[in-house]
Image (cartoon, rainbow, N blue to C red):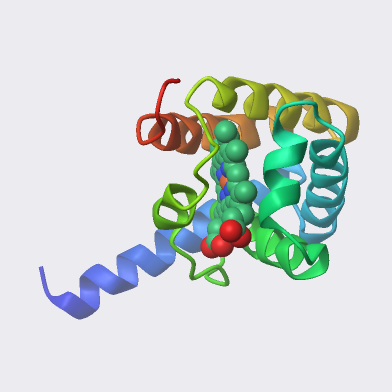
Length: 141
Ligand code: HEM
């Protein structure tokens, strides 16, 4: 297949995925609310709070980055250019058993804020996949 044709198909697929995400109720406004609420809760979490507290000194840039990240995965936009795996390799206190706690808190936040159950599942599917990849790189104990 010609390169131009392949990249045209990729762009078309991305536009379709973005349209279907928007149809179920995902938007930049919702992602902003989700990220603000989740990291507010994270800071009060018994296990995760101190880890984030020790790494993040200035929250507004982290929140802005996380909004770009979730727009990237949930709306297929291209704003986040970070290195997810490398950054977590630098979070020395993280353990694989903490990932289910992160996911539980994320799911509860979604249930409390999302416009409908489909949006909850959309984000959880993406988060579980990345959580599993991250957990496999973290020490168990
Ligand atoms: C045990 C679970 C987790 C812990 C303890 C954790 C901790 C952290 C910490 C401390 C940072 C800031 C690092 C720094 O700026 O030095 C960070 C960044 C980040 N985390 Fe996590 N995380 C966890 C799970 C996840 C999951 C499941 C996702 C995705 C679904 C995720 C996505 C991100 C992203 C996108 C960043 C920004 C990376 C960048 O700077 O480019 N994290 N995480």
